[in-house]
Length: 110
DNA sequence: ATAGTGACGGCGG
DNA sequence: ACCGCCGCCACTA
Image 1 (cartoon, rainbow, N blue to C red):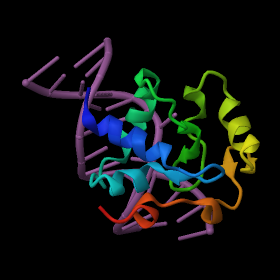
Image 2: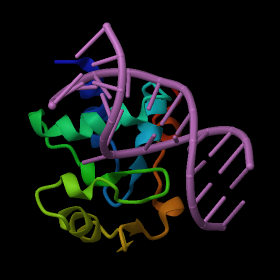
Image 3: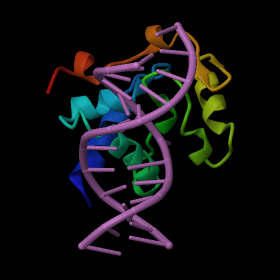
Image 4: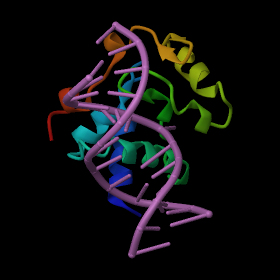
């Protein structure tokens, strides 16, 4: 439907395995710096997408898994991250600053 | 049409 | 460094 959602999904799909990013980073990359919440909404709507979106690699700026409740299970998000080598401790990604992947920095500033 | 809410983020106290 | 308030945008009651 809306191209914005597809952009968010496409950006999320660019996240390398074992790396993570934040809603705000994606929002900035898409030129909608003040619409971080919309990115979250797009993630919520990603189930409508025909493409599998690694929404578990997207967290808030603090590396907190605030959206895990929206997954099928309450701890699926953690296990997915753990299976990719990302250490999660009490809804908090360990070494978040080191695992952080900025699309604007890696893919180029829009 | 107005008000409240939310997978966020930045700024001020 | 921690806590709280405000701004943003789309959706729902």
